Structure formats: C-alpha cells, structure tokens
Image (cartoon, rainbow over all chains, first blue to last red; front, side):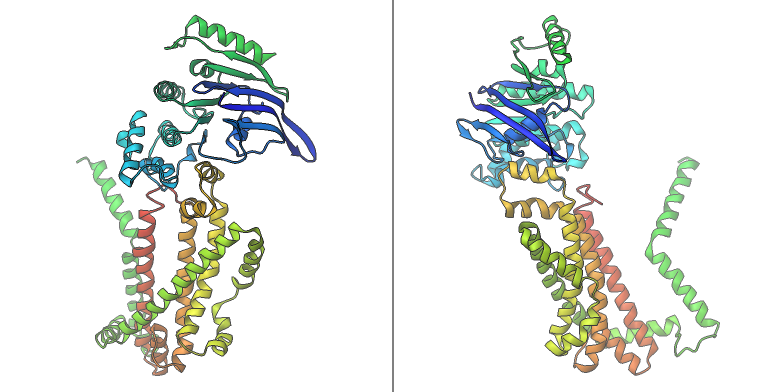
Length: 249
Length: 269
C-alpha cells in the first residue's frame, strides 16, 4: 500500500456549528492502481482529495504516504484541478510543463528539461502547441497540459479532482482514453475523484463509492473488467446498475 | 471586390482615422488657429500656431529645451526606479508578514492622499532646493499608488495559482517571484501608468519652484523662465514638449509593454 488513510475525521465550523465531512475514514491506495472516488456532490470527496494533497488540514487521524505522515503539499502528491485556470497564463504550454522541473532542479540542463517536457507533451498530442499560450487553447487542451505538467515530475500519486468535469461529452471521451493509455504506459498511481458513474467504471481498477453523511464509504468495488472497455458492454452496464442502486439508497 | 466589402474597408479606415490621436490633434490645432485669427485675444496671451512652432524650433536649435527635457527625464527615471523598488519591497513585506500589513496600510492611507507639492516646504527645509528634493517628491508620488495597485493585484490572484505553486514545492519567496509578480502584472502596469503621470506632474511643479532658486533646470524651469520674460510662445513650446513626452511614454512604452505581456497572455483586466 502506498497511501494510507487511517481514522481520518474532518469537520468544518459553520456559524459555530460543527459540520462533519467524514468520520473515522479508513482505506488504502495500492501502488500503480487507478482508484476512483465516486459520490454525489457534497459528499466530501473533493475535500478528501485536498486533505491528501495537503491543502486541507484533517482534524484527527493520519494520512501517510509510504509510511510517512503528510502535513503539507509536496511534489510527491500532485493535484490536477477541474479549473481550466490552473495553468499559468504568462507561460507558454512548454514553459508551463518545464516550470516544475525548473523549480525542483530536475534534469541536468535547460535543454534536457525542455526535451523532457516536449516528450511528455507529445504523449498528449500537443507537440504542435508548445509555443501557444493557455488562453489560445481549448478547455480539453488545457487539461491535457495540466495533466502533463503534473506527470513530468513523476509524483508518487496523481490526484485528479474531476479534471474532465467542465468539458463537453466528446472531449471528455477523448481525454478519458488518453488518460487510460498514459496510465497504462507509465507507472503511476492515480486517485481520481468524479461524480460520473460511467467515468469511474471506464477508468478504474477500484472504486470507492461514497454517500452523503459522515460515515460515508458505502462500498469499495474491485473493477476487473478487462480493457478495452466499451460503453455498452454488459459488465459495465451491470456495474453501473449496482453502483446506481448503492448511491440511491 | 464586392461593394459591401468596399464599404466595410472604408468604414474601418474611417474608424482608424477617428481613433487616431494625430487626427484629433490636427483638428484642435485648426480650432486654435481659427480662434487666433478672429483677433479677439491679444497675441501676447494667445499666440498663433506658427509663432509657437517657431519658438519651439528656436528652443530646439539652441538645445535649451532638449537639455531641459533630458534633465527632467533623468530625474524622473531615477525617481521611478527608486519608487518602484520601494513599492515592491513594501508590498512584498506586507504580503509575507502579517505584522507589516497594518503598517503598510497605515502608511498608504497617510501618504497616498498627500500631494507631493504640499510636502515641498518641508522637503526644502530637510534637503535644500536641489536634485535630491525633486527625486524625493517623485518617489513620494510613485510609491503609494504603486503599492496600492500591487496589493490589489496580489489580492486578486486566483487561489489556484498559489495552490499549484505550493504543490510544486515553491517557498514563499519563489511564490512571490514566479507567481505573484507575473500574476499581478496587469495591476502593476496600471499602477505604473498612474505613477508615471503623477511623477511627471510632481516633477514639473517642483522644478518651477526649485528652478527659480537653483541653477540648472528642466522643462518646468524652462516654462517658468519664459513666464518671467513674458514669452508666451516659449511657455507653449515647453508645454508642447511635456505633452509630447507624455504621449510618447504612454504609446511607446506602456502600450508596447502591455502588448508584449498581458495582452499576449490574455490577462487584461
């Protein structure tokens, strides 16, 4: 197990009233797996991801990566947000991807860093857009750059907070396939938050189904449906039905 | 080419002409000349365009006005640089350390509404009537609007940039250098525009007062001297140079800077 969530409790204070987000939550993330966290909006799944990233403090319990308790954001856990504005508008696509390499002094020289960045950009088919500025890109392209910027420093776990939540259905489909092929070609552990049941089934090895209320892990489902997964496959439809019933209750 | 396309082109040309400053300057000059030729005002207080241009030409040939412009620009450049560095330091401290925030806020609210000219008597007492005093006034008129704009800019930075910065392992100084400064650039440029205009005004007024006392002087002193000799055309020549420098800085420096930065990045506010 690479990431361990142990007895994690989190609450917000609102007008002096304690609002519990989750209570004594426990689960682990295995190395190299694609774990989806699925749940309705407001169930605390995004907050959970922010806690793991280190953006939000937990009130009790422990989150540890490779046995080491986490306390603040670090480059071993990189977050990809839903927001298109996560790229720096004053940097080109290439410069955005070079940036994490540069500040962390990864790579021997400027040229080497540029080559690393270029090779990652070609993984998401953005070779020709290296010199574009983010405002010249479509939403889907921005998310691809954000994904590559996160992967380029080889985080131990990639945290994705509904990264495809704001793009149209066709682009989402494209992005999902791209992410899948990347996840299968490089060794990376991914924790992916979504409210889209279909997306979770299509991408994951394992699905954590969350419900509303603080005791909120409803079930952890192993997803062994073989790849490539097709939209109208019977197994997918069955799993969809199973999860739908789980969330509805 | 179709008639519609032709009309569109003509419309665009018309818009370009109407938007160009040179076009409107020419119109204003023509109106000026018409008012002059009615003979309602004495040429001593309302000279003709030709006389003004002639006076300007003479001042350029003698080098007097060129020297004055260089002298003024040199002072303003020094003042702007010092003011800029001070403003960046003050606003960074205010962002980095909570204890500084109150101090900087207080300083801004005390000093920002205070016209530089109002400080003149005090500054003459402290520093005498020399270059240092003029630079002091310029720094004063630059630093506060700039701090104000930088702080507003820092506050307007989307939270996500800082989160991304933290995630990629940046420390506080790197966050300022790599994220807060470029992200607040639109506000910084607005602050620089305001600062430049204020500094330019402060400089000219200070020169008019100091120039009379000190030896050499810039454009302000040039205008003051011509007033003393009742040379109205000379006064206008000085004013024209001030206006031209102001417009050139606006168009060539600020507009150009915006074009290669925030406009290119799609960051205009």
